[in-house]
Amino acid sequence: SVEEFCGLLKEHEKINEKIRKNIQTQVLHQLMNEVMKADRDGDGELGIAEIKMLKYYMKSMQSVIFHEDRFDAILMKDQSMKSVMQVVRNLLDDDVPEHEKVFELKVADVASGKIKSGIFKTP
Image (cartoon, rainbow, N blue to C red; front, side, top):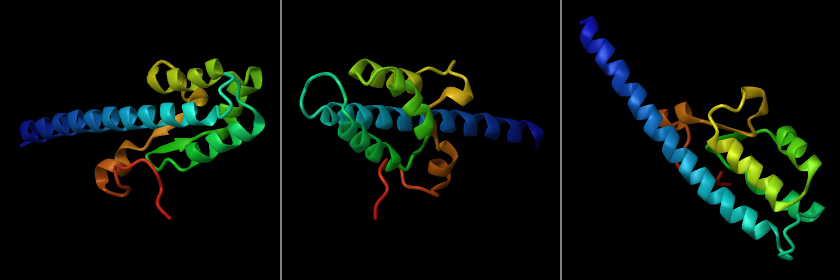
């Protein structure tokens, strides 16, 4: 019946929201780990080699689409850890316009099993 179908749709939406939050938490955790590792000399600034390594890790995240150009635009202003933290805030802020988002979560792909829930691509 229509009521059952509407109920199933609502349940599906709730499940997708839980998956989105789970992916977001995984990405945030891994991103913070990689950001801390990227600042190899501990000076609070990211050099060219450190940024290159961080971008390599970000590109390997399978549960998200990484927009490198948007990331670069943020870091063009400042290569400090503060700028990288803006990337993290960008991930957490649902009010960021689509054209400014550095990451897009692949909720549908994870939910459908198209990609595994782990966040890194495997060779």
